[in-house]
Every structure is written in C-alpha cells, then in structure tokens.
Image 1: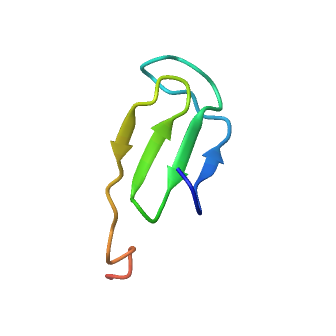
Image 2: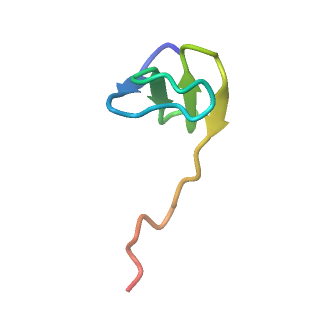
Length: 52
C-alpha cells in the first residue's frame, strides 16, 4: 500500500496472531496484514460523533 498508510503498533491480527503487522490506509478505508496479506474494510463515521 503506497502513500499515507502507516503501521498500527501494539495490535495483533487475530487470524495469523502476528504482532505489529497491520497497516492502516485511511484513504482506501482498509487495514492490511503484511504477514498473511489479508485485508479488511473499515467502517467510517461521516458524522464523527458530532450529533448531540
């Protein structure tokens, strides 16, 4: 994943149980495991908690 992706430190991927291998790509709204190459879409909140 090129660009703005960055590693999520301190997290373990539940499928392969490897620590510190997850990369977040906020532009594409996904997380990728660099160990087993699986990806997951992330749910975004367009309101970002602004409703009272």
